Image 1: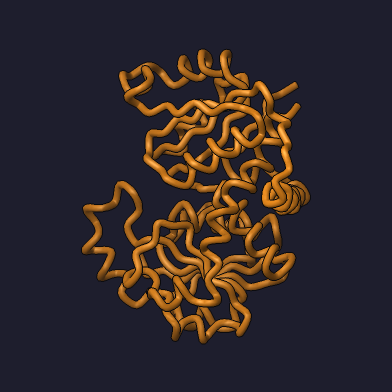
Image 2: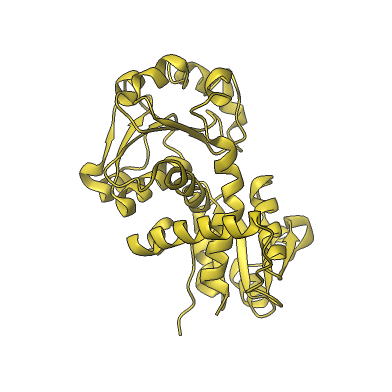
Length: 301
């Protein structure tokens, strides 16, 4: 039997994606009721962090603990990866000792090479190209608040980054319209766009892109590793702040999301970030529940 990995959302079918969302909602309700559910008792998840994190580490570690399993935190300082051991060698050794591996790193090729050599499931905790776990949580938040997102309009405001790429894949799988409002020079990768067909379009005017939208989403202007570009990006994205005026262009019941950490006064105003249409805190909590649903799918066999 072949090992199943989760490197991008496209590793799921449309039906599986929806099933994971509904299962995450169910697991959230169970946890809030204080129910003990431990399908991963005795299982071990290795967590490899080449990029630091708050939400990714806490959610996976807490999720494994709640499921009766255990999580190992590994940084480059803690492993031979930081000393130049080939990825494939590390993957073979680690996968012989644990039941699953989560990797948060820079290049997407790292998780692809690691998965190719691993004998257990590999989960992409974030790469420079994709952040699929966040899209499990985001879509869970939308489904909880508004029901199925099929046929709705989502507006992405900001850089054509890993989050944008994952929203493009989500649009393909869940069948919603995605408008991408980004300045020239910061577009998502053309091949990722092309695969989505007419579900996705780039609109340079962010106010036009937000018009009649059901969900507005943004991210920091300079992601981890891009700090030296901060001033340049501040100039490029000056007109791309999600603020009250932009939210007023959207539908009255539109939601706002941000994967965090957020910079109030830059990509989003404080009024929107902390306003009634914002579901960023539900979205953040959902990292725990959505990833538990994913861990159950991949490891509880």
